Image (cartoon, helix red, strand yellow):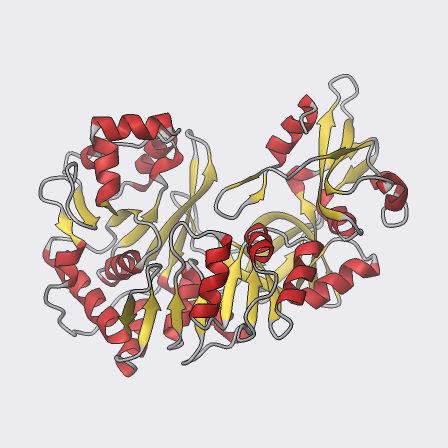
Length: 503
């Protein structure tokens, strides 16, 4: 059974139960969700969508985006996530690789990308939007089809299909058929304008990922999962639980308030975001049973605060990659105990997938949740992660990134091996290593950037670090630069800040 069929089967069992609570508090029942998805599927097929058609998807997390994405996949289409705010050249390069036949976007984005005054306003705010209404695929003369969400605004292409109209149309309950191994989602992650890179997931690989989450994270009717993350929202719905979405722009205090008001039993945060939530609300509601952290390493300070704020909850750190998720989960208690033991590295937990460590220390992964591969490239059997790791007693320990390695004479310093120990020291909030190359010697100056107290830190480091890992200098910074939705550490920017001597 395909991913969408499983979700709709669950919806048919509990049609009157609330499936989703939107950011504004509006509720959508399982019955309404099922009917709308089937209606969108029917409408797209009637409008000419063919199996394998790519749909450029520019709709932010919301009930509309969920219904539209599920309807596309149910119709045999492929959801293509290519951020229109990535810049004109990168967006064009991604478009050339993906070659979508359809575009789905919010009416506001169509207006903002087409109307001159709105485009000028967006440009002043540093956002260069492509003209979505006039998209053309090089070498393909066929016009692109369009679907919009929200009310029709000036700039929405003539002939574009309204999601509201599609969702209100006929919803025949014919059996959903499809190939679990066919592409369902394309997610652009990295690369250059010359060679953009996109991960291709199938319904089968996504379903396997959801099953792994459900095995480790008990979910069922009565549970409420507060998150904007699709890969936690989908297992929530397949389990018959309730998905609570925060508003698109939700301040930390508002996020904490909604956890309490909506009776959340599970939530997911990026570590930096959770720290902000705890600044606003040092105590989380007692009905919270699971707090998940992911998308970036969780510093010891954040883990301690999370455990103290939610003593009745299990605080879990999720290690995952876009290509294969989840990979491993570790409890906050286990991670803190590992750091305190002096064993080095960041404990990831027991692997949920097939994991081996290559001779050079790189972590290689495979399993049913592995993506099919990268768009335009041969299929993947095993994923080289770029992460360095070891396996201790059956548990994965992250020791660094291959590309982050700092060369110091004959010693190769992997930041991820030592940063957790530094961040666990009293008074240190966060810490990150960067190397500044010396063009004359080829060696690198080792700089430790620290958020928090640095007085006497050089002496305390000698108690927790190898001699060769001691920094050449320590720099105090108000915060570590981060980027992306996952708020990951941006070592390139940090290196530039340290080089320029900025504080």
